Length: 230
Image (cartoon, rainbow, N blue to C red; front, side):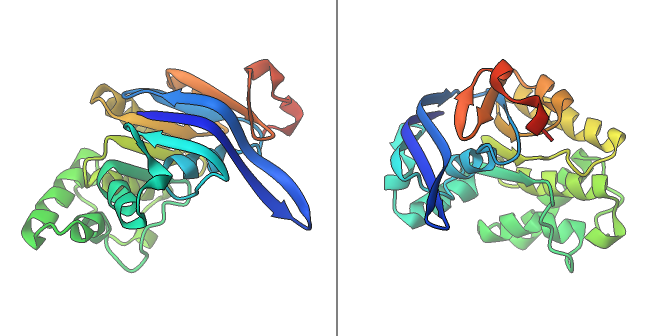
């Protein structure tokens, strides 16, 4: 699904250059469940943003399903994000004044789906994540675990083949964490690809592969300094 070649991303702060991510070659295959681990500031979210078409590298190419992602026009890159990629965030990013149902309907509306079909699909997705009795609740009326499940339902609205998750269990209690990770297991069984940034060792252990980052570089797990890990 992905091939990264000669990638470098550098940030400039106070006249200093900080290498956020650097890799000569990296491949992520269709149907893989990949956990990206490492200390805070090691480049995990930078990598996720580049895979999601939201952050262009300074050098090199990000190939997505055989095409150079950042050589595509912006509107085409946006279309691919909308149709093929689902994003899961630690902070959920739900619209606070919309109900759970309406939050799930948002990507369907943006995709041009009719109102009746929007509702039917959103209800089915909320039932799938165990929130069929909470469809009219707003985010403030839901627990953090329920909000994350609404976010997952929204992620699935356009049936993405790829899910990019940034600390999806970071704010969850143990029961909600297990529910989310079980859903991820199911997504992979359905043939989706998941790339998950996490500081949670238990969550990382659920993945079929780990990518370990330190100071923007891919390293072996034993090379990650444990004193910096969160």
